[in-house]
Length: 213
Image: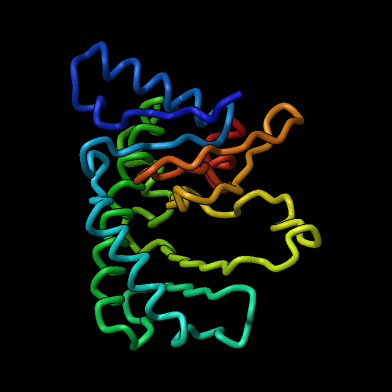
C-alpha cells in the first residue's frame, strides 16, 4: 500500500484532470486520512519549496542554540501560535517563518475547499467552521522540530501511535530521513519521503465535521 500522491496543480487543469484530482483527494481523505502533495518544478500548491522550505530548515539549524527548550538534549522544538512568537536568533528565521506560514494557510484553505466540494457542502463551509463565520481567527499553530541522531536507536520507539486533534494538518517531512507511518486497515504503512512535498492529514475535527466520512 502507498499513501496517495496527488498533483494538486491539476485542480486548475482540464475538466477531466480536475475531476480525477478531486476523486483522488476524496479517496485520500476518506480511505486514508492522508495524502501527499508534491511540488514538481516549483510551488504548484502555493508554497515555494526551494527558497522557503530550504531557508526555513537552514534558519532552524542555525538557531538551535536559541531554541526555547534547548535544555532537552534529544529534540529542539519551536511551537508558534501566532506571528508574534519568534526566537530572536537568527534574524532571518522570523521572516522565513512568516512567509512559510502564510503559504501553508493558503494551502490549507484550498484543501478545505476541495473537501467542501467532495462532501457536497457550500464553498467555504469547512473554513467557516473554524472561524465562526468570520467572528474569530482559527487556531493556527506551527511546530518546527529538529531531532539529532540518536546514539541508541534500538532503545527508541519514536512517538506513540496517535490521531491529530486538529482540523487540517500540513507536514513538511525531511526528504532524507523517513519515519512517518500511517495506520490503514490494521497495517502500518511507511510514508515515503518526497522532495519538496507536503503531507496532508485530516484531523479529528474534520472527521467530526464530515460526520465520520
